[in-house]
Image 1: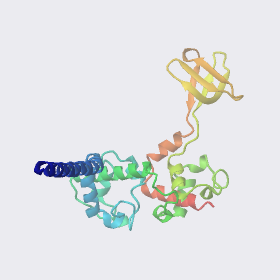
Image 2: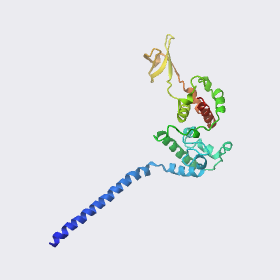
Image 3: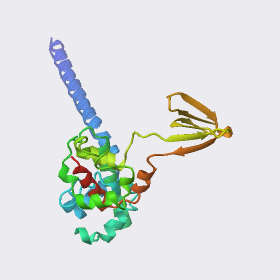
Length: 267
């Protein structure tokens, strides 16, 4: 009788212990499933760069680089064109006295860490579905529209292909501020044009459809697909965005902000 009474009690105790252990293992599994990806996905250089940025730059540019007294760096063309601190390093070490930014004597390692952080923030903004379509215009509209107009009609050469009363009329009403700046810097939708000169001297021109080492193909003025052997014709490629790409490497921060302010005024 004694064994019969203790048997079920022992089994109940064992069952409870097993359930408790299973629960602990389950909870640890949940914790690891959330903590593990975070621990391995974060680059140590980005973490160091974030801390360094908060200490040295956060007061003006915001702790997350989204702007405060200074401009937003998450979508800065300077950051976009920087490669491992080659452009950011010069700005950080020399400062911008005319903009109120002091020089900062940081080491090469600290500059690389800050660059890694800013590139990570830029990538996060680019790939995140949480970036609002109505991005605060005050974070972008920091330039002088008058200076932007002068640049548009002068050194920028924009008027050679565009007109404020033609293709760009009311452009600011067609795009949100963030999309307008993106289109300004990285325009798309225009195809490379190919001009094929036949042995007879006749020329066929149209948007490029295919190109390799042996064949060139296009859609002619009537929309027909035509292909030619490269060794039998003369080929000329015309990229309508060449001027944009060449200008992009010459734009200063002031040019970008001023030109955007001018385009934003075209309503």
